[in-house]
Length: 255
Image (cartoon, rainbow, N blue to C red; front, side):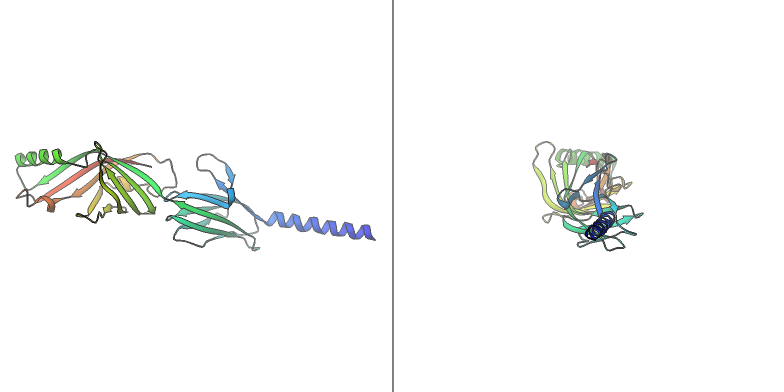
């Protein structure tokens, strides 16, 4: 009798724990560079702004759902009931809860860090209207001789998906042109508010530099394009007759 009861309890225990193991949810970090999944160390994954990632799911019962306790920092969605896609929105921390139809759950902590991108001003052209060709050349020569932004290095520190702080240094002397100035990046322009002088509103030509800014590929290629800055009002008093004066910044920008 005792042997029978022991066997019955052993069978029940094996059945219970095997079911529990099969239904538990396991999460693994997916690599964007190689086709491998890695254990999540200390239950935490770090991402950079605009460079989220994917989390593989194993086990569980039925359909998965995922919930963020801080959608300002990170949001997530389940794709084809196979993996989680994480979107890094702003600097901070968020906790994702993965749950299945049987109410099994798994937690992962998401840490979102700033994303740094660097731009280099290769050269600056000037488009001038309203004066003679001779006057245009004289104005261009004067502007070129005093231009601070030629060969400038610009460092963007994104702390939100489309905004952050910007620092620009002179390419020759490494002196700061502007430092830790707020910027907003949109599909069509880059708005910089230095708080001291007139704000800078760069418009993209051909929208080249706005492409792939939210890509999850951290190894995206360097992009090349032009920013247009209208400075007509700054020079109309100095150069009578000017109807339009635009600086064209030819730049490269990378990760």
